Image 1 (cartoon, rainbow, N blue to C red):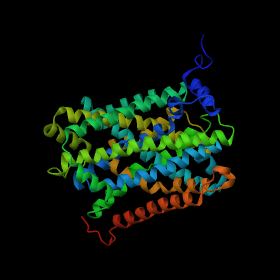
Image 2: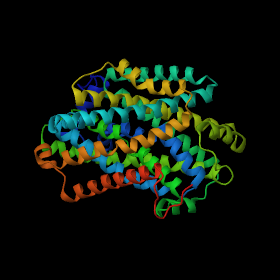
Image 3: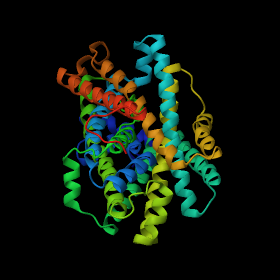
Image 4: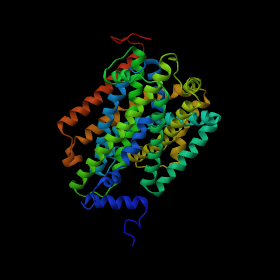
Length: 436
């Protein structure tokens, strides 16, 4: 005889079983898996093609010395993704919606403008990354690869019509492919694990070029659209009508954030380690995805190069899907206007097609997009800190003074880094750093 849960669809069944756990009628390891999903989807933003480019340049030119930047950025990411998830769980609103409700109209439209720019910069990196991977893997023209990428991402987005669970499983599968690919690369490429450990723990910037790459790593790791998206993925996802149930949800969410972003951090570190082991000793000039692919082939064989491209393709497709979801959520939250997914997909693809049509180097465009993201990042960070520190918004779940202080410090650190990068960009002197 079938149970009520068994007769439901995948997403409805998940909601039913969540309710059982929150009511105290379900326990065990499976209960943790029921609540997994939002952080998994958000975490792909931390393994997108922008990360490939910045980590490739970091490892090839600076070896293991910038691994500490990934560690620091990942800690900041965990804090802000956890806060974003909690905001959605407690309020049943996402960050963009709450910003529209609690901030003045000029501030809201300014936030929306910056957020749309960051969404386009994000999708530029993700869409181009997938297209480059497809082009190199199957020897297709780049424009043709971009069209195929657009069709594939739209097809995956269509899975959301069946509920949140099918889409989460697809994204999770693509993330697993990326992680397994870099685990395989670590077995192929020689690695100095002692030097990697030192680079992870000891902060060091060799020159102003290293600073620029470090800020790009930050922009590629802590992503504005992921901060907006996570609150939307957790709002109204599980039936939580009491503070007790919300507290359980927040606890499940925090665990998921730690696990998934730890994995994302390890993948990012693996990217730098592989680039360092493959290129730092004799090919420091490698700074583009295409060059890395063509250099890997004679050094370590077709297998190593092919695995690299498969991981890039999985990263680009999955992150492009997530980027479109985030863009849709940002627009609807700030303006109340919902654009059809196909239209949003066309709008976010346009900058990538423009870059290719104008003959701009695709890898350079990817790197510059990450710097743009680092400048847009403080906007959602500041809004998130303000809203989660307000008792009228969060009630019993308002930030503690310690949590607020740590979040403010993280936001301030990113603002300072952006100012330093701006000074460097316009030729200003940076004490302690020599120009390159």
